[in-house]
Image 1 (cartoon, rainbow, N blue to C red):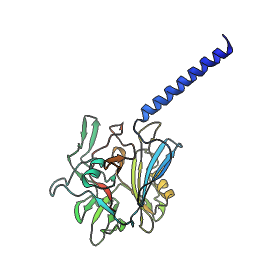
Image 2 (cartoon, one colour; image 1 turned 45 degrees about the vertical axis):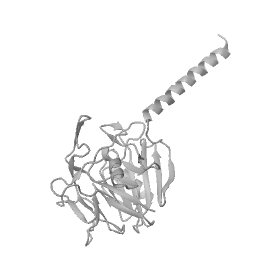
Image 3 (cartoon, one colour; image 1 turned 90 degrees about the horizontal axis):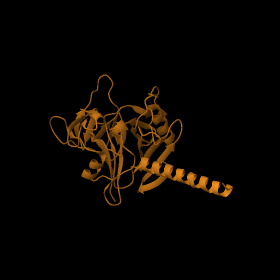
Image 4 (cartoon, one colour; image 1 turned 180 degrees about the horizontal axis):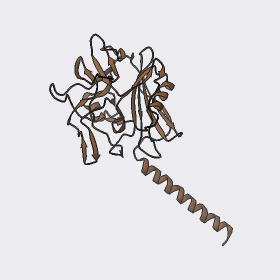
Length: 294
């Protein structure tokens, strides 16, 4: 066989293999955000960062940095649906954004009841009654107080004028949302955070002067795309962003970040994963929303 013909056939085989690899990669990623770094202004006073890391594992983090002093910016927590019994009906983050007309939304606190045995056997479905784990309030109505003994869940309190404070109950509660753990306090990562369990994560943080709000969602449980972070790694990520105080919200299959698209419809910025199915949103209890009214 002539050398030129052999080279041509080898080149064709190589190109076919490259094409198959790229095609398989595209199918695997589907509609997930491209695993490339990105910085983009989404709204007035709102910047989106996509952070991609390859060591010690594949990780994609989505960060929204919000200037709370921009005119027309209002923070909002899911209001109660019921005065008695479980106070909330479960919603996905996209449903929350669309129902209440906010421009930005992330999932909130953990909740009960919850189970996920199989894609056919899980709770809650959208509309099922649930109760947040921690202290929760919306528009001055306190609808969950959580278990304050022996270790209360960390809580972010939000005033009518967007003043933000962690763990100090103000004289008059307006909005409040709780989480799992404090991650950063007074500009330093909290000592002793778990550094072994790797999962999808959601976190909320503030700058030292309270002006800047940081929303972070880390994708996880998706091999060769994004595997997730430990709490200690999440704290270090927030510290690197310049966050002064931060707490984790519910993670795992709950972790979701959504904005209002140009067509007015919900646009998911991350790759949520419920029932280990990428792109699947979990109905959760409460959410943090942000209005950006001109």
